[in-house]
Length: 355
Image (tube, rainbow, N blue to C red; front, side):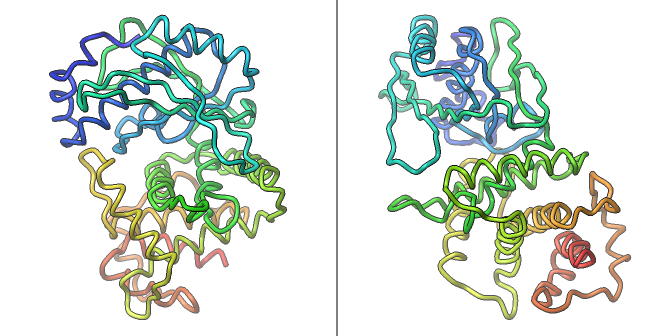
């Protein structure tokens, strides 16, 4: 699908310049990820493309590089094997293999597709994660696979969720104490994976347009995640988890703030994500703004608020509107944001008005 020249050292280093000098190995894996995506479509696999990599297609100015493929697909293993074998025959990939994991209750299958890396001079791989439930999103759309990092030999369209559907999905993922990506799985620490969800939610926030669609998606993923874990978390519990985690981030380094193992993990994730960003800063101040946006979206869902129209936009003129407004109770520590991060303070103020 992707032109052969796009897999060369010269091409990758040239395109690296427009990606903020991102790690060339990561850029190479991104190109191969989209090669795999196109080959799966070419070989007639029916699926919905989701996750962080899909945002590169959905948002014109998405600035996080992503190297794995997440898809929803209900094909049986026998059919998958046949399609994977055809992919190897018709593409740049050398071989594929299953990547078994310790049972977790989540019916996700993992596969590695290997290629010869011209950057690292060894065999590397793209990870494909497949989860059943291709009908879980309330609506989907087809978009053309087209990015500045590569050229396609012919146009290919892929099915992806809408912005609203993805927000619902990612809100469930950003709930580390209930149904989301946990702070750790056994020995695996998930700090960066958690912060990736927050980054994505912050990027999606300005494009949210239908809170009902967000809610339908959210409810579907809450039910699915509860089922995988054999748990029965309520909608309030999972949304409170998201809001509380956003609060924990927002209060970092403010007078009266707390530090614990969770804040250490979140700080670690903030440091780790920097190498995956393209021409984009996501230091603590930017993280706090994304956290405030995410908390507000979760609160809108929780209260079924219809008086707050989407999308929500902030501009500097709103600073004057803040006046003597202050947050109270647990949120009072965030009042210091008014002077240093008025945008984040504004979103928390909107949230507090819903309580």
